[in-house]
Length: 376
Image 1 (cartoon, helix red, strand yellow):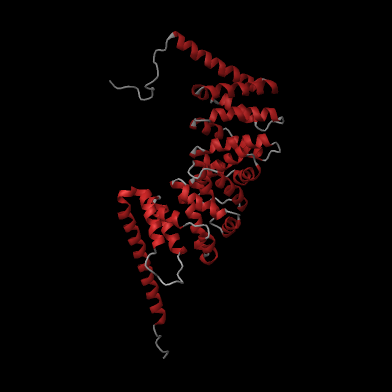
Image 2 (cartoon, rainbow, N blue to C red):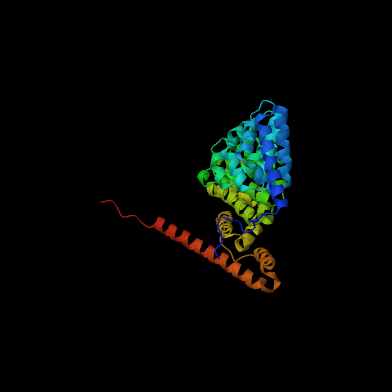
């Protein structure tokens, strides 16, 4: 027998009297709080918003029940209220309605919350600024909201929170900026160079394999695209070291982004950045990345290793020191039983790449030395 596709498999087509009473009570509660939001004085609206926040925090069903225009729209209208108490109560209620509910996130943005949140990011009251940052973070997690928030002017204001906010505010700002950076409509997102210092500090102090480190490293890769950003990264004390440590200790994604930053530096001016990078000892981490990184990280690591090599010295057979490093990496990747085989393959690949590079340079040199035909 075919079932009605519009009916949830978990729904009860014939609810009991007790269930009907519970549903009726919840509907009456929603209607009463909506009435207080619409018709009450400022104190009544604040209390209604606080009640909604409390109920939404306690139950996923309540989050769905209260996400109706009669509740959401008045809460959004409270965001530009003259008194901070009303703004804070509305922010917290909307935040709790949006948490872990993609549909509610979209409803809140469609109700016109974003322009008010942008104004709150400019507030002189730090608690309101940081609540607004948390709200932008939550709402920007929904793909359909990212274009609206990206085009609203939120990015420079989030960077200001990143620079001067509390630790929690900075963490929320990083995540919100990362969410916006993944928007297809804003793939060319640019970040002010002022974001370099706080991002490197946060990355330095975080666990390199954490999700937060992935987001911070991704934003640093974006900043490393213009020369101004690269200069700021290289001049920050222990900035390059922090990226090298991320390559050594990070997750698959954070290592990919970190090597991307260093590669961006070297590609722009090898002479300027090569020694700065080599000074921080990146070779072991990069060699490991050529074996166990993501596909993109492996390609980037190989290219960076080539750029860090000293072309002025004659090519020699691989040294014992390098053999030891490669064997250690192979042991960590494949275990002691297969280490010798893996190390041999890695060394052969490196030698082959060196030979190919040498042949290419010889061909270029031969071409440049070919006598030119005399002019007639």
